[in-house]
Image (tube, rainbow, N blue to C red; front, side, top):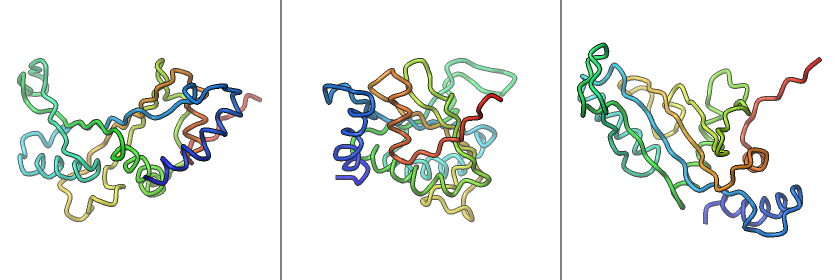
Length: 184
């Protein structure tokens, strides 16, 4: 069992039940899945760079990524319908926990000039989205051999729609939120 999953089951669940006065374990929020998306942008014509990035993203996620195709043609960007414009992967179960552990404990501390993530990035369903500017913060990527730096979008999907509970859960995992500014 992954150490964060063990921490969730043994420490965080009882803490959330006590904090929000929940009577049932099923009311406690949990992470259902993590989605990772990335566009390939101007590297679309360079097949070697696209293949290299797909391999790097697969190594980061721990499973094979799937290509995302353009739904419509866009002449201004020289994109035809069906062209590969990005890659995506959905993580669940043990791979999700392993990626989340790596994200919080290894990748986030490697971000340059990092001051924490905003707490307003929760959507109306209670899910949290993060934009990562450089994919080279992950240990699987060698910055000396990568063929261009890409950005990633990571979405953490919860079973609860209550933002306060989900934010508390992420804070308990050690998620680095920026300090909220108080009105003066």
